[in-house]
Image (cartoon, rainbow, N blue to C red; front, side):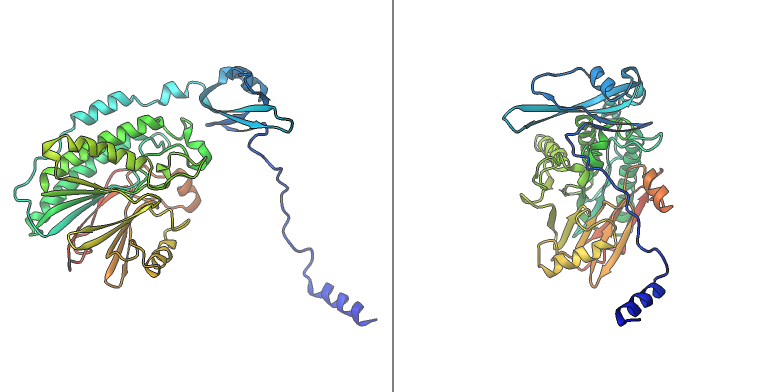
Length: 404
């Protein structure tokens, strides 16, 4: 037996048997080709290409996909147009669908909801508002419009009411034990609305959202006004720092400015309202610079760094590495004394020497997908703390637990 034959024989003895993983062959599913993704909760259909200008009705497109037009409702339509070899143009249509009757059964009465918001009255203000410290309230991941099982925006609004009322009561408790703060910070780390861009546009269906995007923004705006009206009488200055989250993105079809999203639009609209009200003239808003999605704000000598958290990666453990990078790069965010973020829907905090990072819980109702995947479930809540120069932010940190 030659040396080469011996080596082959030895290799065959070493191998345990057939090794390596089988790979499932997946056809290339280019967005312009006719295809569909449908389950019992809805989905979408992409039509066959047509000559530009020939607009079919929805029933025709549903029949083309083998669906009964009487069994499905179209929630939105998107048209794609492209030029083929030879100069002609073709068009295809994407229809987002929900089961028939879903819209009428689950559509939230947004006007009734807004009327309820306008009638809500905050707790009466306390006395003296002066002091060197600052009281911070973090309202993160409200995701107005999100549906989870049988719950949705109405339950999020209820948690908002309770959280804001408890934040006011917490302010009273802190003053009673001698915490003198003249400034309140209402931090908005992002994902103010559910939006329509996450999960490849699937959030546009009524199974995932009970409000359209303009309705989500309208409700969020009115809730923010109510929250400001509750907190403004308690302080000499109310600062509202704002960054956008991934759900706040207006589009992913083009590269958009991360500083300009739904959260900044909601806040800037409320800023216009405050500017017209003499009793809210002490409310100040701060936004990221153009092309940035993080913010550093000097709060009476404490550098507060605000970021949503999706920049870090797929889990909150990656946030430490993200902050290490920001610190090493000597960015404005990296130089902060205190960092606040959201995104991961659960409370977490870590010491960084004499610096501190706190991750805020969420106001939304959770995620069935996350619970099924991990067995874990985050508790809704609103984060509060007292900050000040040479004052330990852990001393009075409190998570206001809210009902699911």
